[in-house]
Amino acid sequence: MYFNLASLYIYKIMNLAIIPARSGSKRLKNKNIKKVNNLHLIEYTIIAAVKSKKFDLIILSSDDKKIKKISRKYKIKFLKREKFYSGDKTKIVDYINYFLKKNNNYSKKFKTISLLLPTCPLRDHNDIINGFKLLNKKTSSVVSISAYDFPYTMSLTKNKLNTIKPYFKNSPLINGNTRSQNHTPIYHPNGGFYISWMKDFLKNKNFFKGKNIKGYLLDKYKSYDIDDLIDLEIIKTLQKKFS
Image (cartoon, rainbow, N blue to C red; front, side, top):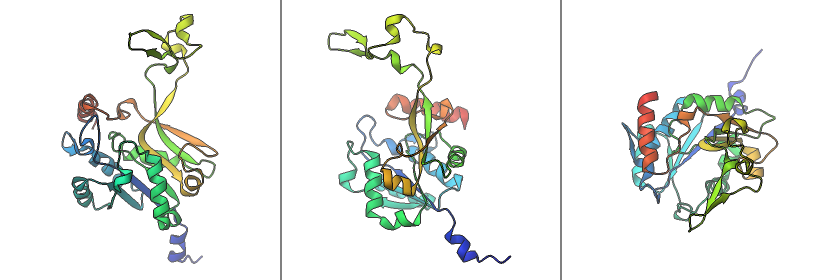
């Protein structure tokens, strides 16, 4: 049987990845270019994306000239992020929707859209590969997740007078059910990756809407998200130990 290679290319699933890395950060200044041992923080995410070999195009979006220089090192596409979408109040999902609307040709060319956050640097290329394995025709999106260390149902509120009370009306704290092993595990997204079929994302404008969302559980040591200086130091230690 004869196959036309050009026609086969048409049916190839084309995957797009976006790595957003704005310059501003209130709690940890210049977070994305902080050094984590031998590399800048942003580089770990770039390396994971490149080594996965899952993406036909990787876009690094930033308003930072230093990050633009890093993109050249890895020969990935850099797009300047507009000032309006570079503030600390901008939601990432809003920026992705804006980006796809502005770059309509990407929406038509690529079959999947992936978001990789630089603040989850210990997720690696194998995690991305395994995440894609969960994406099928019956699944709209795949999101990397982590388990909460402590049952959220035992959350408390505290006022200015240091008075505390259970956050939830039927809190297990009230009936003394404080053994964490007795509680159903609860999970949260960790920023490692969000993968979705392009058509589903364009329709739902979100990675968490759709007919079937699957979670890929990251190992605990890979799940740390960098938000402040303490997190950064923890990540440095973990990276040395598990790399």
